[in-house]
Length: 86
Image (cartoon, rainbow, N blue to C red; front, side, top):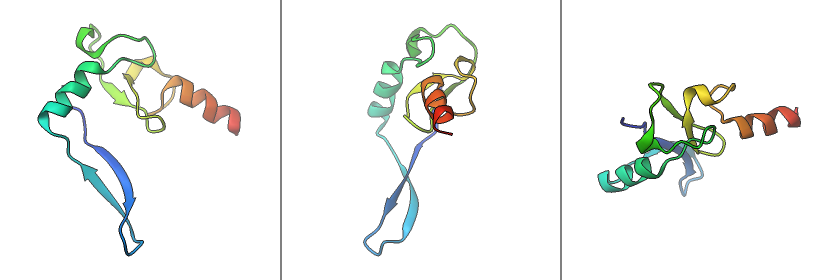
């Protein structure tokens, strides 16, 4: 499964905010995929038996199965922390 590119904001010297893409080497990308463990059920990516997509938490950037959280694009631990702050 090919994961989307990580997007990060960075500031240029002129202090204009620009959104850029960080391209990983194929070798780094494969290594990251092989080491990913679901935040929700702790199942390693390589051993995944579920047929659901993996998503990346927009707060902590950890990976999880789409159905291992009750929040949209946020893992369960980050979702609970965010809900408590409100």
